Every structure is written in C-alpha cells, then in structure tokens.
Figure 1 (cartoon, rainbow, N blue to C red):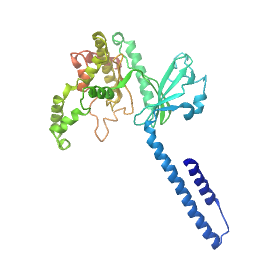
Figure 2 (cartoon, one colour):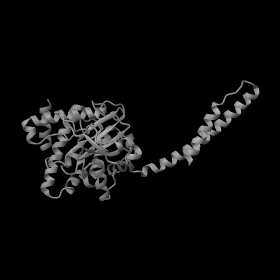
Figure 3 (spheres, rainbow, N blue to C red):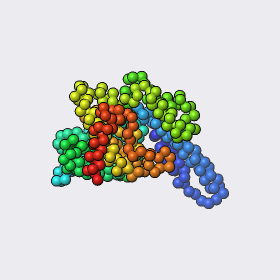
Figure 4 (cartoon, rainbow, N blue to C red):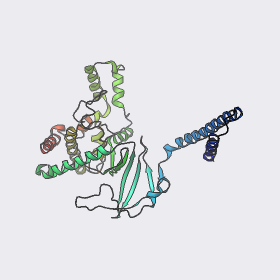
Length: 355
C-alpha cells in the first residue's frame, strides 16, 4: 500500500514536470506553482520510500531463509543445463552438469551476508556453494590453481607423498569482478568461532589476553616497542589456559586417543605445508577468521587470499613483519616437540620440493 502511494506521487511529479505552456507572465506563474507542487510530490514519495526502506532494513538481519523462486525465477526454472557444476571440470573434458537449483537459499549472518546455495548435479549429488558479493574472487581462483600445482609437485615427490602432504582446495568461480561462487567445505569452522565457543564453555572472555595487557599497562599505546613486548609477554604468561585452546579443541573433538593423535599429526603437517606455500606467495592477513579447521580430519584450511605478494608486509599502517602466522596457540596444538618435530621436517621437505 505504501509503495503504491509512493508510486502515485512519482507519477504525479512526472506529470507536473512534463507539462508545458505558452511563455506569458500568467503561464510563468502557473509553471512556478506546478514546480512547487512537483517538489512536494517528490518529497512525499521520498518520505514514503525512506520509511519502507527503514522497515525493511530493520527486518533484514532476521531474514535467514530465501525462496529462489522469489529471488531469481530464471534460476528456479532452470533444469538440465549443459553448464557444468563449478569445480567439476576434469582434464579429460568430462564434467558434472547442473540438473537444477535447490529452491531454498540460506543467508549467512556475517558482515557481507553471503548466500548458501545448493546445485543438484547430473550425478544426483548436491553441491553446496557460497554466493559472495562485494568481493573480487579472481585472485583467489589463481591461488587455488597454484595450490593445485603445489599438490601435483608434492604428490610426485616420494618423501612428501609418503606423508600425504597436500593443501586442501575448494572450488572458486568468479562470476564478475565483484561477485562469485566459493565451494562450501563441509564440517569445517574458523579458528575464531572454535576458540570463541571453547572459551564461552569455560567462562573465559574472548579478549582475555587484551584485558590482561590493559590491566598491566593502561597507557599501552604510549609505550616503546620493547616495553610493549614486555607487557605482551607478561600478559600471555598470566592468562587462564596458557593458550591451549586449539590443543584442547582437537582433544575434545576426538572420540579416542588414536583419532586425536592422527588429527594432531594432520594438523601439524597441513600447517607446515601452508606456512611454506604462504611464505612463497607472500600471503598475509592470516587472522583467526581466515584460518579454518576440518573437524573430522584435523587439517588446516585457508580462506580469503586478497593480501598476496607481500601486500600486508609493505602496507603503511600496521605492516605484517612475520613471514607466516605461527602463534603460541598453533605451536601448543602441535606434538610434544612443538616446532622441532614433525612441523620442522615437513617445512623442510615442502620447501625442498618447491625449490
């Protein structure tokens, strides 16, 4: 009803601005009156549309399910396409064709609100993707191609093949310069959400380390670099759990000690391979929301490859000086020897193959 009323005022505005008459003083005063009426009409239309927009904007966060027939009737009606499922193309030319699009679309409640869509392939299987907007995925696609090359090199070397060293890949299909499809990797979660859930279960604040630092030095930002390091080191020593979060998560997610041991080894090796490949690629911005963990295998998985070729290292504000992310949480989740065991030997083997 509001939109219909807004449309009426828009039509009224177009009618009034489209009227012309003779160039006489009487006609000129009529034109002035018409312009005033037109301005009033457009303002009324704007007020109605803005009110509707605010109401929609308020309801948007609670909207987590969409009907494909309402969003895109063309996709909803598309059946038995010749187009292949993204990521299913093979070297020999074979691929899985898109049979149809599943009618339910889920909205992920993160900042950019990407959509989780499901395609049914000609093989009868469902393929899940994340439809992302406001993001250029072309570089991410190239990085995945590089990971494919690295996997081929690692599989060719007897030493690395024996230890099953590889990078977990997923399909990336850019549709334009600002949107694309990203393959959904099942049973994975970001380090951030895993640590957040773990700390919530133990009643530990998520920003515990930061709180400890502020407690020791309220004027932290005014300190010298050496003083900051001293405060930071002291805060890490005083925190509850001593940064054993990921170590504990791997243990709690395992059903028995054999499974835990296997997952821990897989985690260490996958971290080592990506540390070396990330270093060569100049990969930055490795915060806990860009690192994922496969809860079944224990394998580490990286997402968002926007900061490549040492962009983060050379930026003006807060440049990243480290070659790759290796914090105490990651080290403590490794084997007893820490970085001096399987991690170091895997790094050396991987770098040898890449060289």
